[in-house]
Length: 142
Image 1 (cartoon, rainbow, N blue to C red):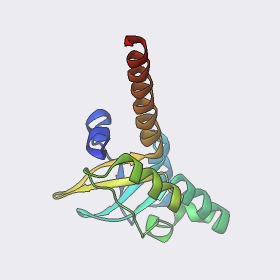
Image 2: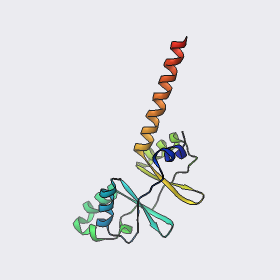
Image 3: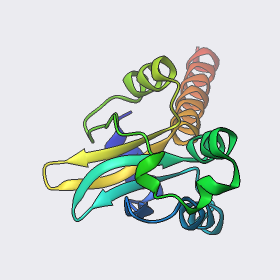
Image 4: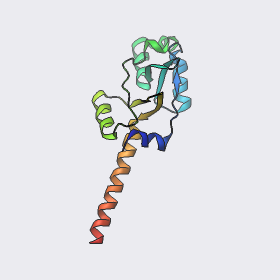
């Protein structure tokens, strides 16, 4: 399966914040939207990603004062992207290798969506169920 199919199934909504937003504002958005990461955009350009892990690391390093600091102080700048034509297996490999849970998806016109490790696992489970059912049907048919 390809990333494009995951986005077709889940939709292309991406929650974002700006580099100048405070960490507290971003944490509130993470909570309210019930997501694990926000894509950080400056105008139409992706400049980073801020995950729940980044927020926890900020507070662990700088205490409650981190909440008043800009997202740009703690965001991950080296963003790994996916493309709609990427295979899910390659995403799993990249996400595991880099220990990341969210990949923004870029197409030719810009940000096309975001894929989480949960989306990838759900896809892999669905593929496995389909394969098992196909094998059962083949065996039963004779």
